[in-house]
Amino acid sequence: MTNLSPTKLPRINTANISIIVPVYKGGSSFRSCLLSLSKCLPETIEIIVVVDGEDEQSNQIAGEFNVRVIKLAKNGGPARARNYGARAANGEILLFIDADVTVNTETLRLVIDAFASEPDIAAIIGSYDDTPFAPNFLSQYKNLFHHFNHQNGGTEAFTFWGACGAIRRDVFLSLGGFDESYRRPCIEDIEFGYRIKQAGYRIRLCKDVQVKHLKHWKLVSLLKAEIFDRAVPWTELILSNPKSNLQNDLNLGFLSRLSVMLVFALLACLLGVWWSKELVLLAAVFSLMLLAINYSVYLFFLKKRGFYFALGVIPWHWFYYLYGGIAFAIASSKFFLVRWFSTSSISEPGVFDYSVGSLQSQVDAPATRRVVVIPKSLQETTSLKLEEVSLKTDTPSISSSK
Image (cartoon, rainbow, N blue to C red; front, side, top):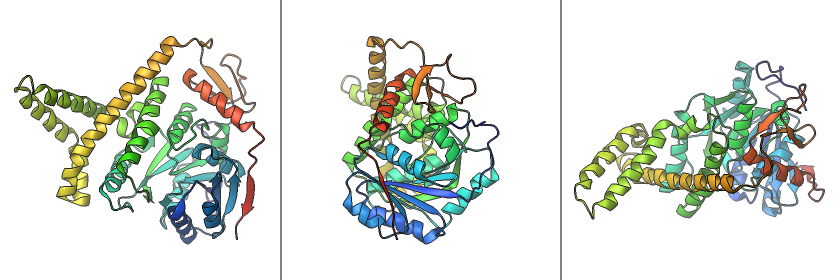
């Protein structure tokens, strides 16, 4: 494993970039992604497509472009696919792009400029742009809200973002890459960002590095992703790492948490009206407080999509706080119940040594090696990752198209 100092990273050729695109049944969005990359990138830039499992259509689409293709026999999730791409990459910077986004003509230049202007940063993340592709209300709302959060976040980030995020390859490999126990699109990038920060490295939020999201959100898919693939596992991650700064990053700030409490208080008042009519007044107070606290969000939507769209955003935004709060309660209960009834013999946090692939006590970790402290709650998933990587049955095939 490479010994790196977070405060003094070695010089790299910032123009030597490998772009990694994991895909599984990407369809027309995947073709649009590769088309956008081919139009704005020099031919010398390496593009690696990792087809995550049996997916003949994606293989055919990738074959239309000048890209390297890695074919995995089994679907294992974007975390695993990105790791395969990173290990095969030649670039000193790894730029991860999701298969359902398109880049613009300035994306690559801005990424290069970010690393060149700040040699001490280990990674950068970008943002969705303010013109989502899908025209329906939920897609516009979801993607614009994401844009708002990133554009109003601090430039010193505490999470990574797999849809458009770049990292030095030496840092990526030294940390072991993404946690492959996340077997579907989840919070694997957020968890990885936590380890980047825990190791002492810096992540920069570059607000001008923007990509267009092509995903068409529907109610069921949105709630499933928001609750089970994001809110619940993110809560578990935060509770596993109480000393981290994750809870203060992006849309997890104080005002967001206050809004969750106000939404539940408002709901309680509305339900209590059956017993006491005076609660209507209190419900109105809570509603006004929610409007005031989130004024900047609604003003943003008013400017971008007009009055009626912004009016429709308000109930959806409050519903977002409601199901987020419910997910937090479920995940918290599960976390503390599991910890209460746990009979695990492990009593101290372990240290995962990526150079030998084992868990060892922090005291026994060699002083000359760079190690990353793994919270107890993540040790089991780390072990799963090791077991999966050691399997010989999924050797990828690598080919070059065109």
